[in-house]
Image (cartoon, rainbow over all chains, first blue to last red):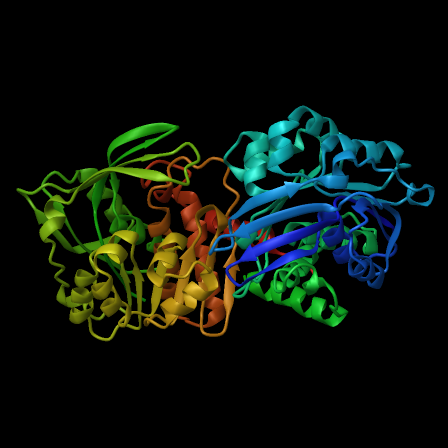
Length: 303
Length: 303
């Protein structure tokens, strides 16, 4: 099944205790589509870059067979840039700078042939833009949406409008608490479900993820990473693996949603092992399956 | 198999957003032995109380069939008292006061008939006292030990001496980071294992628990609690359920250690549903089995 990904394409400058990188390929749409491409086909991208977006960035996405027809290139503009520094424990980061550049006036235009995409993954962008995307789509089967504290704090009403239109919301634990004003994550999930999405997935970083549906709670373990090299993009990669698996299988049963959570976690675990998108460049299906099985072993126990 | 529990018997004054209690029954030895008593027999206690320790406290332990021969009663003394206040999100608490009272000069004396106990659970007390207990024992099969930041910060050398003598250490995530000086929990577990214990269990509160052995990592989910009434004693109850299950089965295989982690988590989930020890008063084996199965459902996913 087809997947449409809308989000940012960025050049990230990152400092971690293990090294630093300048203008490395990043952005939510890049991570989501690269991850989804391991399962689904076609994966289509809508986003915007400036004339300074490197050839290698395009080549990376082309190598992952991502359809770039919906990529706007503003020759005279500059690509969105983000820079951040990770703390020693890698669980926290400081944003050093955000330069929206061409992203500031981004107007997502969905190419005609994208409009029937069955699975839509809205990366973490302005909820008004997320809605603009949905307005152009022709009855997608599933809409998956990511958001962040920035929009919860600044555009809560707009975000709530968007939440009414989506099926699955992915956000992290602090964002879930912020959006629901409820410290208990199980209650937070219920509050958020009442805002629209039938499924809420709460990412908890080193503690794994929770998926809350009408009748079930699923607790996914985190992969026991000893060497996280660069956490950038882990959440987007999770979303990409998740939507990619759903699109591959076209199965929205509870059991398959759980698998999708584990495949998302699997790809995220590869992502953070290397800088930038390098961890998503050359995975084999066997590597992915092996790690999926490791996730099973991690949480399996007998009667 | 027999279980020896050494730790505090206390009168706790607790404030939570949902209510408060004065001089409620508490203390690590109380929670551990009550939890262990659901699986193992005999469960023996060594501790100390003052003349003010309430009849109902004794009656509660007797009802749970805990052997009290090792309980020292200092008629003229006062029982150890702790008071604390939980924050709105219940993940954090402030200690308001700690009055050691008779606990200040506690000298654990192991009754003759306790010395051959096969499973020893050392509650969170001074590591010097923990060692004094072990000096009196006759080759226990397993020694399980709890500790806390207080001892890590103030008696690290003494604690390290104790760690060399134990098999399984149970501590929470912030304590594991403090003891190992390593933010990554998987690495922290390895550092701690190099200090002596072959198995390290890291409790993560609302995020479940990690068990680290030589060859495996086991990630146990947390029960999705919506209504935590009083978190006091959850960690001790976990330890009690864990050691109780091991003593019941007398099986230290990896698979059974995992079951013990889930049984510990199961009892802890009952504990926090009510104030003080009330959640551990009248459980049935069926209730425990049903919740164990709920834990399985929570983290189960298909190939």
